[in-house]
Image 1 (spheres, rainbow, N blue to C red):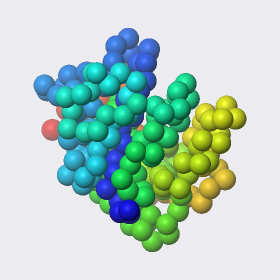
Image 2: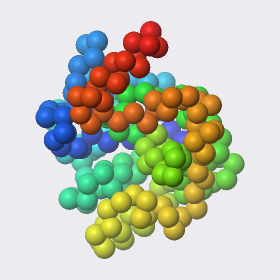
Image 3: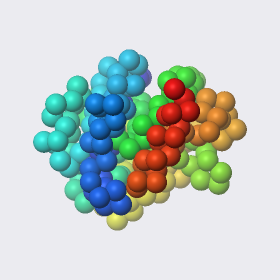
Image 4: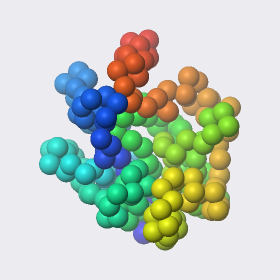
Length: 201
């Protein structure tokens, strides 16, 4: 099994705060999930979209999978992505996080290759960011145990594992405004996305 190669995009949310499927928002003739995949396809050979509405994503240049363990929320999506991935380390992001840093991904790859941890995740203030991160398939059994015990937060799984946490200061070397963690949950977040994109053009 290759060390790297797979990337998982979670697209299984209900988008209740947005009022419609945010993954399918059209921006310059591309849906948001297509924007995310387009940035990843140059560095990952195995692209996976995890969704509970596969019929909406069959046109994408990616493997479409659904939750294996139902009703577990994002943790169930992470589990499905890891189970079907073709590499030991899997890059994980979400369909509503449109900014990808290839340079930061490559930096995290170097960390994973050096230390072979269970995950490489980023710090943001006092918290850790579960997305734009690398996870090892070795944590699959831990996820399955936690779901069985109704523990659905990814950090419930990670806190007992071998992690490398990248400090916010280091993350800002690659994403000074932390845009890689922008999560579009509502229309205000969508406005923020347009504002950042327009400043970057």
